[in-house]
Length: 247
Ligand code: APR
Image 1: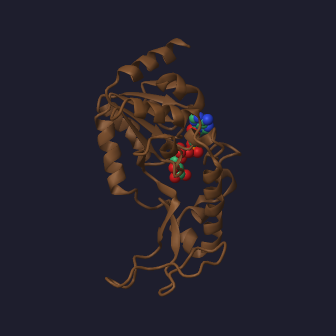
Image 2: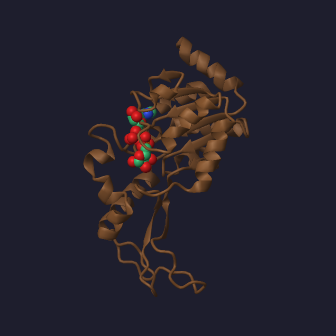
């Protein structure tokens, strides 16, 4: 094991509070595509404005719904990789010491044992109504008969179901962001795994950790937009580095 990895493993074993912020690279070795990796990334093949935004959904609900249906099938078929399992196992052995904050909308951290992972960008396996239910105080919207490939709609008012993820232009769930910020403020060590650091406010958490006195380390095969916020950088993948650090 190289010296920097051994030193970091020491830090992991001795830190009282650790935050691990993860991005799409965390699930890459589980076969779920990232967004900005050249060629293989989703945004190299699809237009995020059309597929991951409310205006895009309103313009073509069927197209967006079927794109998410495909991504959901991919998530359901995926398995947590050795990186997810290392974090889940550590949390089980050391209750309360590790907080996972994820930008990912898959459920691999939860399936690996980090059941309380903080979801900054929602959950691709959940849906919610596009409009607030129009009948104040009346019966909540109920999905009527679904047409395959189309978003279910309310039998009475026509409201549409939409994927429970945070789309471009939308705010993050305030409670999730607050939980993440307080976990970061209390951490002695923060690992940033598998994120390009391109999307805020998630990308700001590394700088916040550094300001709060945490030792910040980036684990990524490539450079990221938030490298300057880190004290050190380990070039490698989630499924190879995390089992060494947390095993
Ligand atoms: N292990 C670790 N990191 C990896 C691996 C791997 N096996 N494979 C790729 N990476 C790295 C890439 O080098 C890149 O830095 O993962 C990062 C993935 O970056 P993005 O595709 O930009 O994903 P992410 O940072 O999670 O995007 C943030 O943008 O599109 C929105 O809401 C979406 O949550 C997403 C947000």
